[in-house]
Image 1 (cartoon, one colour):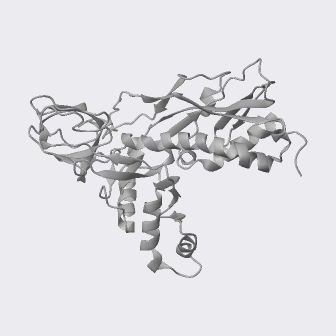
Image 2 (cartoon, one colour):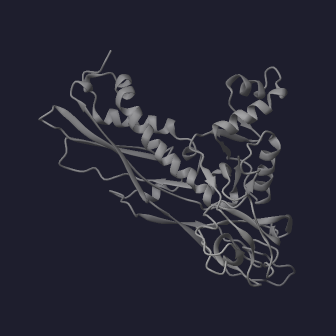
Amino acid sequence: MGNTLLTISYITREALMVLENQLGMAKNIHRGYDDQFKTKGAAKGNTINIRKPVRYLGTLGAALGIEDATETSIPLTLTTQFHVGIAFTTADMTLSITDFSKQFLKPAVSAIANKVDFDCTLLYRAIYNLMGTPGVIPNALSVYLDAQARLDDEAAPLDDRCNLINPKMNSKIVDALKGLLLPGNKIEKQFNKGRMGEALNMDWVMDQNVRVHTFGPQGGTPQVNGANQTGSQLITNGWTAAAANRVKAGDVFTIANVFKVNPQNRQASTDLCQFVATADAASDGAGNVTIQISPPITVAGAFQTVDSTPANGAALTLAAAANTKSAQGLMFHESAFALGMADLLLPEGVDRAARVSDDQVGLSIRMVRAYDINSDRLPCRLDVIYGTCVPYPEMATRVAA
C-alpha cells in the first residue's frame, strides 16, 4: 500500500541506498578522508593534502645515525559536481517508495553512480605496473597470480585487496576454472553463478566501467637521449619525427637494464622497472620526445625506485604494439586509490531540500526540489560532489586484457 505522501528526506535516504548498491570500483577504494571535507557547504575546489608515511633507510652499528624526516603528500581535491535533474507531479508523490524508486530514483541515481565509478576507473592511467598481454584476455590464473606477486613485491598489505575485471575477463576466467569444479567448494559456487567471487585472498569485482586504453602510435626506435637522467621526466630520441601523441598518457614501457627495487630493502629485482607516461607527448622535427613519467627515476635514498640510471642510448620497450586497444583491469589494495565526497550546501528559498550522508560508506547525496504552479510539477535535482586521487600507485597493478 502506498504512502499518503513521500517526504523528500525519505526519498533522499532511498536515493543514497541505491547509490551505494550501484558503485563498483568506488566502494572498494579508500574512503577515510571524507570527514576532512565536513565543512558547511563544501564547494568544488576544496582540497586536502594526504600525508604519506615517512620512509627511513636505517643505520648499522652503535653510533646514532639521524635521518631527515622527508614527508610527502598528495592532494585530494573535490573537482566534480554532478547532478541529474528530474521532475514529477504531486500525484507521483502518492506512490509507494518501491514504485517511486523504480520510476524516478533508480534511473537518476544509476547515472550518478556510473559517473562516479567511471571517473574512478580512469585512475588506471596513474598505475605503472602492468601484467598480462594487452589485447589478450587472460585465460588462466597465472596472469592474476603474477599481478598478485607484483603487489607482494611492492610491499602492499595482504588484506583488503580487490581485483576489478570487466565482463569478458570474468567469463574467460570462470570458463578457465570450470575443470576445478568440486562439490561444496567456492569454485562450484562461481560456476553456478557465472561470476568470480572471492579467490586468491581478494574480492573479484566485475565492473562494466573498466576502461579500455588505446596505446599511442609510437614509431621509430625510441631510446634514452642522455645518460644519468633522474626524476619525473625522461628525454628520449629516435621516434618518428614531428608527430602528435607518440606516447599517450597511460602508456607503459621499460628501459633496458633499469631494474625495479624493493621499496623496503632496496634490493634490485630481476624485473625491469615499468614506467607510465603521465601525459601525452609529441615528437619534434628531430624525433625527440620528453616523457613525463611515474615512478620517478630515483637511484638512492629512502624513496629509491630503480637500481641505476638509464644509459645513453638505452632502448625503450613499449608494453603493447602501436594503437593496441586493451581493457585495463585493476588489482589493488584499497589504499592505492582514494575517493572523497562531501556534503553540499542546502539552499534556502526552495520548496524542499534534503541531504543524506552515510558515514560508514562515506557517501553524500543532496536533493533539492522546487514547485511549478503552472504544471503542478516538482522539478528537482540530485547532486553529489567528489574528487579522486592515487596516494599509493605502487599498491596497484593493471591487468591487461
